Image (cartoon, rainbow, N blue to C red; front, side, top):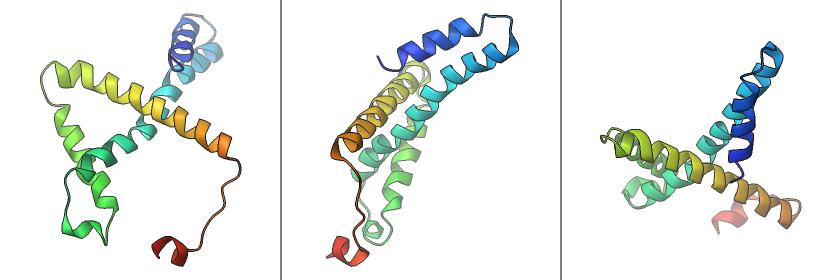
Length: 120
């Protein structure tokens, strides 16, 4: 629901003849989509974690790579992959982004730990 209002407002603003307001409307449509793509990294990590590899200990980023490749291939499925899955990924990614920002805001400032405390 958080992405619906800016998208609807952005689409309404693109109908206005003023070019600056049209740019604002396009921005209101594109920003939730970009945030949805950023939030969908968690989905790709979840998918990639289900495909374990011995190299994951040394290179944990490979989980995200494997999940992203599998998710990209699933977009090739007829009908579901073309229409349903991209919308679902963007909406769930936007929701994940909003929840992450909300959680970080409620926790307060983030303190960084030294690398030796994280590993051990």
